[in-house]
Amino acid sequence: MEGERLMSHWTYINGTIEVSTLGRTQEEIEYILKTVLRHLPKVTGSEKDMNTYIIKKEGHNLYCSCDEFERANPLRLQENYIIVVDGNLRDREFKETYKEFQKWICRLAKRVLVQNVLVQIYGYKGSTIITDKNMNYMNMYEYPSWSKDSSGEPNWCEYLMWRKGANSNLPMLLTYKYYNNEKNDEIAEMYLELKK
Image 1 (tube, rainbow, N blue to C red):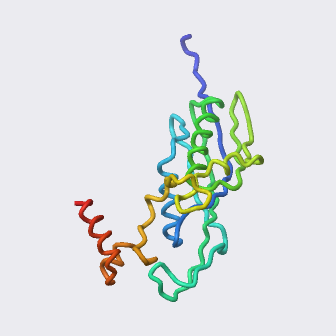
Image 2 (image 1 turned 90 degrees about the horizontal axis):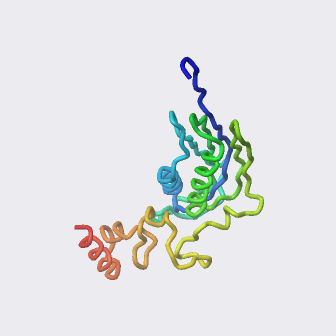
Image 3 (image 1 turned 135 degrees about the vertical axis):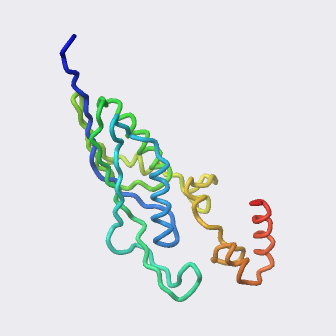
């Protein structure tokens, strides 16, 4: 049909997801969350994919009397974040975007604890508001290997955390570098040998 202009299909997505993630310092918590988001499947558009923004909730929900170096520097940590999702997705039908978002959020929910969801997806052929009133996303969370709720398998995020030293809360390699700890030295030396 000569001269006829083809119209693009657009689908829109926006909303918020409250999550809680692993970490022993505020920096580690944020690093883990950013890494998780960077490795999730895409919710795509022909020009631009869905954007995500993270917002740390106000205040703190964890307190520790010392820092990661066991110094008397109290840590007040906030492990709860709000993820904002936003996208104007060109050349996408509603069903495609819905399917891609479900894959995205299910993967997210395995890696971090999803606590609240309020996301709207709409386009020419459909519209929905996604919530987690039945806690389906929350129940997908894979607890870390040290948790009593764990299946014994590690959570995907565990590889991002430093290894604790033997008989120490300090990182294994710093314990090796600065302290005389025979058991830790043996483990650290095996680890360093493997890295060669």
